[in-house]
Amino acid sequence: MYSYFNGVIDSTSTNNVVIDVNGIGYNIYVPNPFSYEVGKTYKIYVYNHIREDESSLYGFKSMEEKELFLKLINVKGMGPKVASGIFATGSIKGIVDAINKENLLYLTKFPKIGDKLAKQIILDLKGKVYAETEEVEESSLEELISVLENLGYKTAEIKKIIPQVDASKNLEDQVKEALKLLLK
Image 1 (cartoon, rainbow, N blue to C red):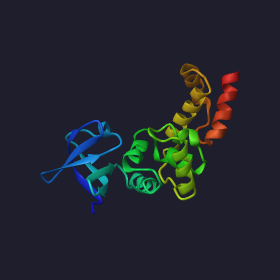
Image 2: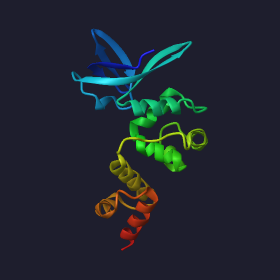
Image 3: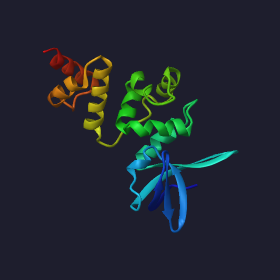
Image 4: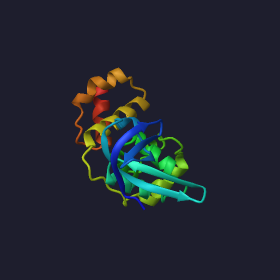
C-alpha cells in the first residue's frame, strides 16, 4: 500500500516516530527511534502490516533494510516486531553475514530469538540474502569485540589490540589474529 513517507519528524518515542507528511501524522514503528531528530526531514521506507485486529507501519532508513525485513518476516515464527528488533542493534551486513555463515551466536543475541528461531532463519534464508552496503569495518569490529568478550577477555585488553587487527579479513581470521595479539 505505502512505499515510503517523506516528511518532518514530529515526535519520537521508545519504539516509534511520528512523521508529519503534509499535515498528517503517521505513527511508524522503527528500530532506532532516537536516531531520528525531531524537526528534520526524513524519507522513511515503510511496510504496512495488516491483520484482522491490527494495522501498523514499520519504517526503515534504507530500501535494503526494508527488503531484508520483508525476507525475515516470511520466516516461520518471525513476526514484524521481532524482525524490527534485529535492526535495532544489528547492521545489515552483520545480519546477512550471520545468516550466510550460520552464526547462531550472533543471531541469538537479539531479543526473542532463541536457537530454534535462529536455525529457522538460517534454514530459510541462507544463500538468499546479500548486503550491498559497505559497513564492513564498523560492524565486523563490533562482532570481533563481542566474540572476544564472550571468550572472557576484558574490554580494556581488547581495545588495546583492535587497531592492530586487519578489519578487511573475515570474522574468523580476525578472531585468530586478535587471539595471537592478546596472548603476547
